[in-house]
Length: 401
Image 1 (cartoon, rainbow, N blue to C red):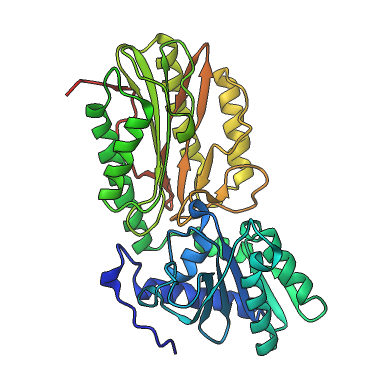
Image 2: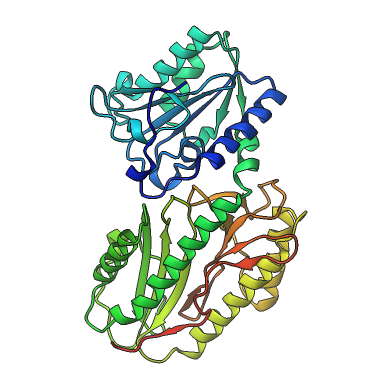
């Protein structure tokens, strides 16, 4: 058993032991079905560190973290550092972890420093004699990591892509996870309402972003991705990442705000609205109303048994009938410990819709210089999905406070 003493009071919002242990139980049952000896997980991107978080409840990654999950023992976790520096995996924050191993990981530097964790995994596999290894979400692994473990163990180990099995478990939210999601949605509603008192002529987009991020962090949000786009009425106010948020907002403008923060506990939802410092044009009002209709049409399709391909095809038929071009991006997708996770509403994803999936739906319409982005999260049920956000689904007029 682990020698570490978990201290929940040292963490902002940990998941319960019961939920974490249930995950391990379900995963090991899936592993047993396919005679898998161990799983290997590596995450590096902070907005998509969900697999490591799902297994360990270790969040806020700023460097690669690797997890070795045996079927018959506790986990080994590799993280950047060494000696007394294991800030991403403190002993008081680890559960189900047998060993925390700090190694120098520097993905942009020389090969030996971008594969130190991979070599640690290879060492464990050889020591244990594991022969059938499941790789979880290969797309989130560094290329050097994947290359090192597969080449070093070639001929000794059979590697299986075990991503779908975990995705199927991870997509269904537990009652505790659903409560976390509701808290995040409430936080986003609170911030979206507060934006009305922050917007005024003369403020820069980045100043609005600064207020949003501080407010979110003060309320327990762990990670924040904030998109803001402003423009005079009649011009497209699209999505802009923070590097491009340098425009001065003026009277009469439209301001698109997309909140993509997780909440306390690290689970994600997202919310998008357009604010008006004046009166909306007829074109903007139309595309906004149409976007809301399209969002609710998508939600009406998200019933148990539906496939992603069916929903995607029917949605595209609907928007073409409305007079818009077919959707080519992912206009709806699952969320949980990842900003974007399955199901992804496109033909490529074979996942079936089931109850208790948390799905963001965000149709984006543009017409004659008007741009609308209606984004809310819906929780699937045995029948119709339920919208998690409470923010009115209207254009947001600004009253100066």
